[in-house]
Length: 332
Image 1 (cartoon, rainbow, N blue to C red):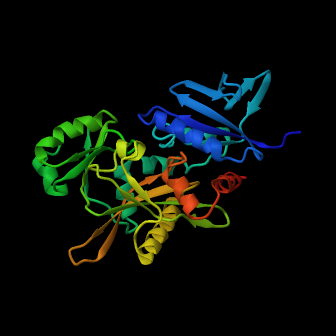
Image 2 (cartoon, one colour; image 1 turned 180 degrees about the vertical axis):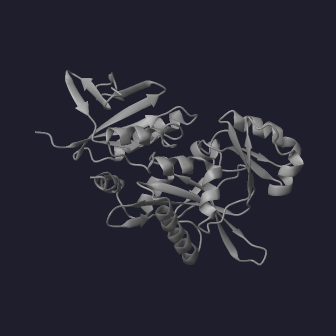
Image 3 (cartoon, one colour; image 1 turned 60 degrees about the vertical axis):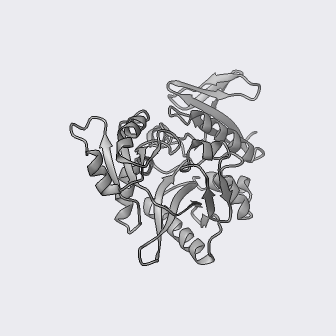
């Protein structure tokens, strides 16, 4: 009798990062312990939900109970590892569905996913706990009156970033160097969603830190330094190799400890679950003192072989297979 748990790696989704999500799913499929688990990749796009079968065939997912029938046998999943970047996997929608079906999953809960997906809401929330963030302004597509370019510049300064509020950080993002470029950048961001955040440009060292927690322990990975000659860490920098990702980062042991402690603290504040990755930028105040600024919290970070998290796991001397097993078993 086969007592192995059956795991769905849920990928795809309806955002511009659909293809990136498929690559993360392939990475996860290669990382998981296949001796311990039955692993399937489930691809979601709109109302097309299907599972990829070992022989190359596909079988539709029954959304009533998140199951499928193949070769005359009905299979129900015991666990969902969500690796959708964007909607519906990073904003609480899939999490609500799995909650209704009583199927445990790898990410944070509905509230936390919704909050971290909305960058503007997140920074307003996290500031209440003393975490530093950049200055920002929210612009909605249906606003009857929007702030003028001069008003925006007076708050966030120039240059600044214009980005969709509720989407990944790879699409619809612009670095704006003068007020006359704002409208074009805002319209570009509206192509990814109805709410746009205009954010102060912070000149400093960009780093990212992964973390996960179980009932027994919290594990914070080594810090990765992100260096690119591009204007910012855009799609090409992320996925087309136009970046240096240095793990561990070329920073002091003291700063490394501060970043890791802050990451663990934020994980606890947000009541996160599974692996998250927090992006920061290190700047300096006028008096020369150091300032750690949170950029965003990624609750479904990329999981290809070259993504940040697998890099950090290797740098920590851990086995990604063991890490994933701990995350799954923590739900049971």
